[in-house]
Length: 177
Ligand SMILES: [Zn+2]
Picture 1 (tube, rainbow, N blue to C red):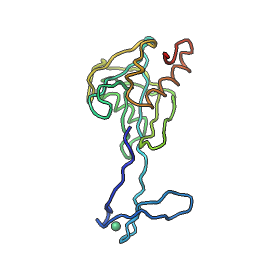
Picture 2: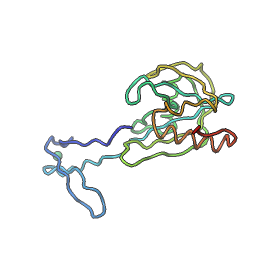
Picture 3: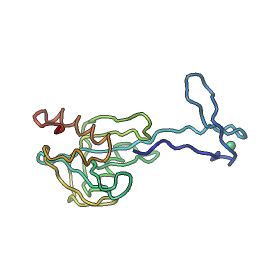
């Protein structure tokens, strides 16, 4: 999980930013003493999908840090101006070469100190042949009982898969002890 970053210089005028309390009850903000620009450290939004094919779940092995070599559901960051569902479709195509239709929301995942808010949908395959795409070492279908829980990249992936299994497959053990 990417950590919260901080910044030193005003992106508008290039002068130094200073941590300043501007409103009671809110955290200090990075404020430019020269032009007054307030640099809000906003979260990033990621869109992901859980794709099930004949009782198996599509997972991909990450080819980049963080968590290189670990397994995740397809997904990635939403671009500014891009609808969240469009980002989910685009990332799924880029990473696993499947064209999908977006289904119901599985959940929204956020954690203290984490930069990303992760939105997870169920998705249905429309077209394409599953294959490793960008930033992907390998794509594989995992039977519900074989999900590699100790090699899952992110807490959000793990939590989303467990929520999904609880809802859609109450018969399947969500996670072996
Ligand atoms: Zn400035």
